[in-house]
Image: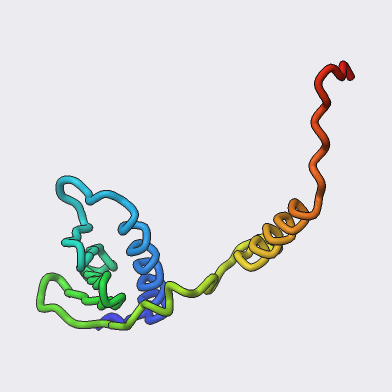
Length: 132
């Protein structure tokens, strides 16, 4: 039996949490596909490899998710479950942004820019009749 790479499962769960946030902002998908929702639950399916199918179920009201797998369509097994409410509060996790471009760095740069913009006095508009 194939071993489960838990880091991959957890990374997938984190990615799915991001998908939850994005899907809530989009109109419902039309037609078939591998994603569906009923307003409270979102289900996402996919292939994990070696005939293994995965199902992610996200409860958008409770901010919880569960991951299931099925090997060649034989039964369903719960792989992982967790609350994701605090995950969505993270500013960054396993972020490989180049130096100076992490969310914290960018937020600091934007705040410095805002503070500078507040303290700078805008140039005075030319007075009427002034040709220069």
